[in-house]
Length: 334
Image 1 (tube, rainbow, N blue to C red):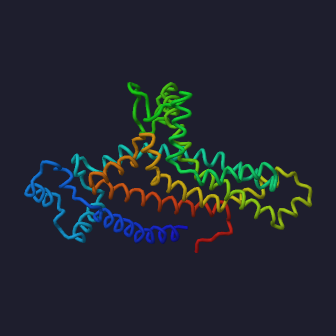
Image 2: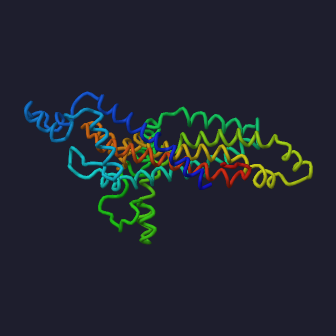
């Protein structure tokens, strides 16, 4: 296992380098210069050129990339060209909001997705199976931003059950420990703040969970159908074992192997793909920071956030491979 982990970590290096190179090149292909954006509309040509030199943007792209990468290896992601604040501090301040949103969405997707997939497989070709399959197809097809707007319109504007945007009601305060407000409220024993944070979290999490939930339902259903057709399941049925015991003790564990892969990939996608959800709900995570930073050509912030997301995605995939060994001891890493 140790050798396997070392190999995976070494193989992750070219992946991360490829992501950073691609993002670096794409950012510099966007029309407009950060210096021009910062000094618009009153900056003269001389002032813009002086600022380009000050920011190091006059150097060749390869030189800029090598300098940025060398600093990133030393945990120096540079400073925002807009505010001058260290990028690492910006990420640390906003990342907990995205993590909290992604974990809540993943919890919803797993808690509802796996049981629905199991029930659909168990009741194959029944009305329950058809309804579950249809809803999962709809969940994959509905655009996230449209669903988010509909949730706001129905549950916030018409019914008034949930806040429209943000993470906490203005004026409310509590000690910040993890940066995830629901957990911090529980740590502080402030249950009113916990309920308030939970209400703010509910709609964005439901919106973000829709696609992963639908995918988990479909993968769980197909995997369960495959396992239920195996010889050892038929043998268990012939022995007269109760259906519940066959499903949840013998079949589900093996059926979860492909589901774990999907869950890991979905968590990585939600961390990086929460941009639309955060924008619709004004959720102050790294997605909103990326959107606002692209608009003003704040390259260091975008590059730093993409690097952190890529690292997270790679680590999640390695963790998924480790979980394989628990679910299926036949897997050997050598």
